[in-house]
Image (cartoon, rainbow, N blue to C red; front, side, top):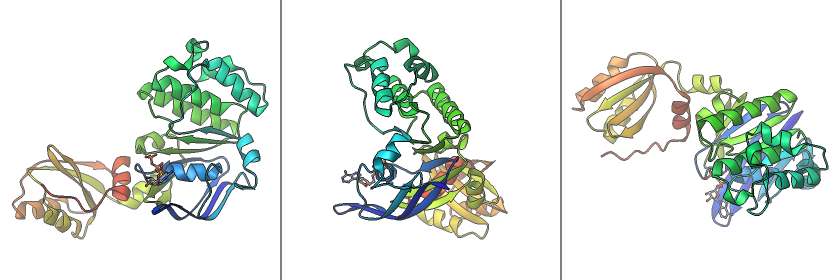
Length: 308
Ligand SMILES: Nc1ncnc2c1ncn2[C@@H]1O[C@H](COP(=O)(O)OP(=O)(O)OP(=O)(O)O)[C@@H](O)[C@H]1O
């Protein structure tokens, strides 16, 4: 049974179309990464799953129940780490946990939960003095209360240093091994690589790709990515490179120094030749297997790049 079914979901905020006929499913037991750049519609989708907002059109089911008519039952079985929600300044971590445990009517031990997220030292400290990372750890501990069937984590790595992000991923894996379905959003591809069974990439309110990490990589390129440092970048040259027969994509990666990343399945010399013919100097180049960032970029980057 799917843990989440989103069917032709549309959400407008006045003139802004945040989601446009979005459809996808997340299966029970999956770790699903929901990726997209800022403003793509990730938080809007999560808010619709939890019935915090209502859709303009379309239908959502969570854990086999209608998101609107059964929101209480859904929330009782779901652990949520919302984006941008701060803890209460005057309450300690223990008090936050006690509140969550009482709301969910469970018998969890606040100390055990805070130990899991690495916040045991601050158990009796008021949250007003917490760093961003500490707040995020506390919110994660609250989401874990009651061994939820579904975890919905909105940008869970926000404010965490690389160690903290790694610990968060470890907890996601542990929860999944316990049997929980995990749905988490991120705008950072590498956050999802290690833990996700499947990834959906959202852009401007539409799902532009949905597949395993490997499948996404393959869809972007059968070959390699060629990173070329040049003396300058011109739109015409970029378009010409994209039009080459073995090239599936070419995007600008940096401006200082100017760098182009080309997905190429075949002759790399044709790419370099095309640039040089246009008087663009190739200062350096290297080849690598497509990184996940390349994959993400190719699905989300604006193709109309302004030349300098
Ligand atoms: N309450 C609101 N009123 C008006 N527009 C909104 C509202 N909430 C979101 N939007 C708009 O809807 C679109 C999608 O926003 P959303 O917050 O869902 O994106 P996101 O992918 O979660 O982005 P981020 O990574 O920045 O959180 C954006 O254009 C945003 O400006």
